[in-house]
Image (cartoon, rainbow, N blue to C red):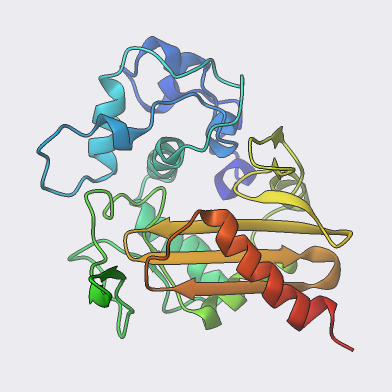
Length: 270
């Protein structure tokens, strides 16, 4: 959205503009489809060849998608959460900004937000002092395990930050530090209907109502980690929690934990 504001990208640009040689169906997939998980792109996780042992990067994902013949459905037809779409968005940023994605985030997002210790992690290129490691439970004991075949893919993950700096992120969103008012309005307005309960989706955020008030929220998970954020714009309040361990259950379980915290800390305070 920064690049849209600067006229470097249009929400109506299609994949063939950024990735010459992409399969024919890419001519119908717009940046807006990627942002709203309505692109129909195949999930790259299902395209990884059996027996793969080395971690994939974003370019590996692009190559896997370049070898596909057809989408899962026509662009714009329906909502289907897609890590493939956000991986391509990261690569589109690189093409349009003419710099690596992690460098763009550091200079254009983290620094102006005051998130000086947050990084888009790239092994061998940037360090993360005192970072938490992911864990999984095996035979009743927690063991360190925070890497998988997809952990090095950046566009759909890879950000390391602290609760303190995530507060800076949320405050910056609330104060509209980075983008034009029109961009923020688009991000936090319902763009599509999702397949998840009563939720709509904007650009990168789910949204619905909780206890009669607007809520924007998102969960995240990868090998050994879980996180959930829900913000209540009308109250200038949010609940965030991060966990460096796998827990059983889907993201709705994390939402319920967040709702219990919101009840205690925001809605039921006297």
